[in-house]
Image (cartoon, rainbow, N blue to C red; front, side):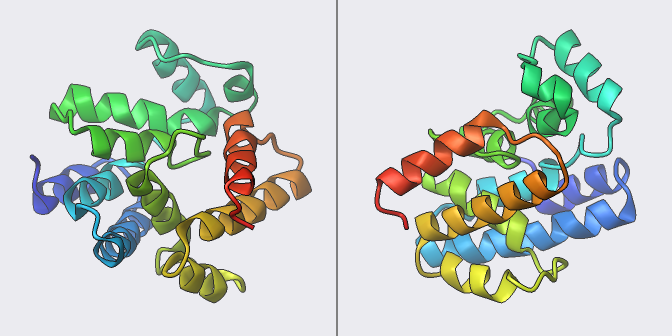
Length: 190
Protein backbone atom coordinates (compact mmCIF):
# COMPACT_ATOMS: atom_id res chain seq x y z
CA UNK A 1 0.00 0.00 0.00
CA UNK A 2 1.14 3.49 -0.79
CA UNK A 3 1.70 5.65 2.25
CA UNK A 4 0.14 9.06 2.73
CA UNK A 5 3.39 11.00 2.24
CA UNK A 6 4.16 9.22 -1.02
CA UNK A 7 0.66 9.86 -2.36
CA UNK A 8 0.71 13.49 -1.20
CA UNK A 9 3.93 14.07 -3.11
CA UNK A 10 2.52 12.32 -6.19
CA UNK A 11 -0.73 14.34 -6.06
CA UNK A 12 0.91 17.70 -5.38
CA UNK A 13 2.85 17.37 -8.64
CA UNK A 14 -0.38 16.79 -10.60
CA UNK A 15 -3.01 19.24 -9.37
CA UNK A 16 -3.44 22.90 -8.49
CA UNK A 17 -2.74 24.06 -4.94
CA UNK A 18 -6.50 24.55 -4.39
CA UNK A 19 -7.27 20.98 -5.47
CA UNK A 20 -4.42 19.70 -3.31
CA UNK A 21 -5.78 21.54 -0.24
CA UNK A 22 -9.25 20.14 -0.98
CA UNK A 23 -7.79 16.63 -1.09
CA UNK A 24 -6.07 17.17 2.27
CA UNK A 25 -9.42 18.33 3.66
CA UNK A 26 -11.07 15.18 2.34
CA UNK A 27 -8.28 13.16 3.96
CA UNK A 28 -9.10 14.76 7.31
CA UNK A 29 -12.87 14.35 6.96
CA UNK A 30 -12.63 10.75 5.68
CA UNK A 31 -10.35 9.76 8.54
CA UNK A 32 -12.73 11.28 11.06
CA UNK A 33 -15.80 9.56 9.59
CA UNK A 34 -14.02 6.21 9.23
CA UNK A 35 -13.05 6.31 12.90
CA UNK A 36 -16.55 7.37 13.90
CA UNK A 37 -18.11 4.38 12.13
CA UNK A 38 -15.36 1.83 12.74
CA UNK A 39 -14.43 1.52 9.05
CA UNK A 40 -10.86 0.86 7.92
CA UNK A 41 -9.47 4.34 7.34
CA UNK A 42 -6.50 3.35 5.16
CA UNK A 43 -8.46 2.88 1.91
CA UNK A 44 -10.32 6.14 2.49
CA UNK A 45 -7.09 8.02 3.21
CA UNK A 46 -5.71 6.71 -0.08
CA UNK A 47 -8.92 7.60 -1.89
CA UNK A 48 -8.70 11.16 -0.56
CA UNK A 49 -5.33 11.60 -2.21
CA UNK A 50 -6.42 10.00 -5.49
CA UNK A 51 -10.04 10.96 -6.06
CA UNK A 52 -9.48 14.24 -7.87
CA UNK A 53 -6.23 13.47 -9.72
CA UNK A 54 -8.16 13.75 -13.02
CA UNK A 55 -10.51 16.55 -11.91
CA UNK A 56 -8.56 19.24 -13.71
CA UNK A 57 -8.52 17.42 -17.05
CA UNK A 58 -10.43 19.26 -19.77
CA UNK A 59 -13.79 17.87 -20.85
CA UNK A 60 -12.29 16.62 -24.10
CA UNK A 61 -9.37 15.04 -22.26
CA UNK A 62 -11.68 13.21 -19.85
CA UNK A 63 -13.78 11.73 -22.66
CA UNK A 64 -10.76 10.86 -24.83
CA UNK A 65 -8.90 9.24 -21.92
CA UNK A 66 -11.96 7.26 -20.86
CA UNK A 67 -12.49 6.01 -24.41
CA UNK A 68 -8.82 5.15 -24.86
CA UNK A 69 -8.79 3.15 -21.61
CA UNK A 70 -12.05 1.32 -22.31
CA UNK A 71 -14.13 3.12 -19.68
CA UNK A 72 -17.81 3.20 -20.58
CA UNK A 73 -18.75 6.72 -21.69
CA UNK A 74 -22.52 7.19 -21.39
CA UNK A 75 -24.54 9.96 -23.01
CA UNK A 76 -24.77 11.68 -19.62
CA UNK A 77 -20.95 11.62 -19.41
CA UNK A 78 -20.67 13.25 -22.82
CA UNK A 79 -23.08 15.95 -21.63
CA UNK A 80 -21.15 16.44 -18.41
CA UNK A 81 -17.65 14.96 -18.76
CA UNK A 82 -16.74 15.87 -15.17
CA UNK A 83 -18.76 12.79 -14.22
CA UNK A 84 -15.90 10.72 -15.64
CA UNK A 85 -13.13 12.10 -13.43
CA UNK A 86 -13.54 9.49 -10.68
CA UNK A 87 -13.53 6.60 -13.13
CA UNK A 88 -10.47 8.00 -14.91
CA UNK A 89 -8.80 8.51 -11.52
CA UNK A 90 -9.35 4.81 -10.73
CA UNK A 91 -7.47 3.89 -13.90
CA UNK A 92 -4.68 6.35 -13.10
CA UNK A 93 -4.34 4.83 -9.62
CA UNK A 94 -4.10 1.34 -11.10
CA UNK A 95 -1.88 2.21 -14.07
CA UNK A 96 0.49 4.75 -12.50
CA UNK A 97 0.60 3.54 -8.91
CA UNK A 98 -0.36 -0.12 -9.15
CA UNK A 99 -3.15 0.33 -6.60
CA UNK A 100 -5.71 -2.46 -6.53
CA UNK A 101 -7.33 -2.08 -3.08
CA UNK A 102 -11.06 -2.53 -3.82
CA UNK A 103 -12.30 -0.17 -1.07
CA UNK A 104 -9.98 2.61 -2.27
CA UNK A 105 -10.92 2.25 -5.91
CA UNK A 106 -14.64 1.97 -5.16
CA UNK A 107 -14.62 5.16 -3.08
CA UNK A 108 -12.80 7.01 -5.87
CA UNK A 109 -15.07 5.60 -8.59
CA UNK A 110 -18.35 6.62 -6.93
CA UNK A 111 -17.44 9.88 -5.15
CA UNK A 112 -18.87 12.15 -7.83
CA UNK A 113 -22.43 10.97 -8.39
CA UNK A 114 -22.80 7.95 -6.14
CA UNK A 115 -24.71 4.89 -7.18
CA UNK A 116 -27.12 2.37 -5.62
CA UNK A 117 -24.47 -0.26 -4.81
CA UNK A 118 -22.38 1.96 -2.53
CA UNK A 119 -20.84 0.42 0.57
CA UNK A 120 -20.70 2.20 3.93
CA UNK A 121 -17.08 3.05 3.12
CA UNK A 122 -18.13 4.58 -0.23
CA UNK A 123 -20.84 6.65 1.46
CA UNK A 124 -18.46 7.91 4.13
CA UNK A 125 -16.04 8.97 1.42
CA UNK A 126 -18.80 10.70 -0.56
CA UNK A 127 -19.75 12.63 2.58
CA UNK A 128 -16.12 13.45 3.37
CA UNK A 129 -15.72 14.97 -0.09
CA UNK A 130 -18.77 17.17 0.48
CA UNK A 131 -18.05 18.15 4.10
CA UNK A 132 -14.29 18.62 4.10
CA UNK A 133 -13.06 21.68 6.06
CA UNK A 134 -12.26 23.98 3.12
CA UNK A 135 -15.94 24.05 2.14
CA UNK A 136 -18.00 26.68 3.92
CA UNK A 137 -21.59 26.57 2.71
CA UNK A 138 -24.44 27.67 4.99
CA UNK A 139 -25.79 24.11 5.17
CA UNK A 140 -22.41 22.61 6.11
CA UNK A 141 -22.81 22.46 9.91
CA UNK A 142 -26.14 20.64 9.59
CA UNK A 143 -24.79 18.14 7.05
CA UNK A 144 -21.63 17.47 9.10
CA UNK A 145 -23.67 16.85 12.23
CA UNK A 146 -26.03 14.55 10.35
CA UNK A 147 -23.09 12.63 8.83
CA UNK A 148 -21.96 11.82 12.38
CA UNK A 149 -25.41 10.49 13.34
CA UNK A 150 -27.06 8.91 10.30
CA UNK A 151 -25.12 8.17 7.10
CA UNK A 152 -28.13 7.48 4.88
CA UNK A 153 -29.98 10.64 5.96
CA UNK A 154 -26.77 12.63 5.42
CA UNK A 155 -26.44 11.07 1.96
CA UNK A 156 -30.00 12.11 1.12
CA UNK A 157 -29.34 15.65 2.28
CA UNK A 158 -26.09 15.85 0.27
CA UNK A 159 -27.78 14.43 -2.82
CA UNK A 160 -30.64 16.92 -2.53
CA UNK A 161 -28.22 19.83 -2.18
CA UNK A 162 -26.27 18.59 -5.20
CA UNK A 163 -29.27 17.93 -7.44
CA UNK A 164 -30.83 21.30 -6.52
CA UNK A 165 -27.56 23.03 -7.45
CA UNK A 166 -27.27 21.15 -10.75
CA UNK A 167 -30.91 21.92 -11.61
CA UNK A 168 -30.46 25.62 -10.77
CA UNK A 169 -27.36 25.87 -12.94
CA UNK A 170 -28.86 23.94 -15.84
CA UNK A 171 -26.49 20.99 -15.56
CA UNK A 172 -27.27 17.33 -15.95
CA UNK A 173 -27.76 14.98 -13.00
CA UNK A 174 -26.30 11.50 -13.29
CA UNK A 175 -29.09 8.87 -13.35
CA UNK A 176 -27.09 6.91 -10.76
CA UNK A 177 -27.62 9.79 -8.34
CA UNK A 178 -31.39 9.57 -8.75
CA UNK A 179 -31.29 5.78 -8.38
CA UNK A 180 -29.28 6.09 -5.17
CA UNK A 181 -31.70 8.69 -3.83
CA UNK A 182 -34.68 6.44 -4.53
CA UNK A 183 -32.95 3.49 -2.86
CA UNK A 184 -32.20 5.54 0.25
CA UNK A 185 -35.78 6.84 0.40
CA UNK A 186 -37.01 3.28 0.05
CA UNK A 187 -34.90 2.28 3.06
CA UNK A 188 -36.63 4.92 5.15
CA UNK A 189 -33.76 7.36 4.93
CA UNK A 190 -36.06 10.40 5.10
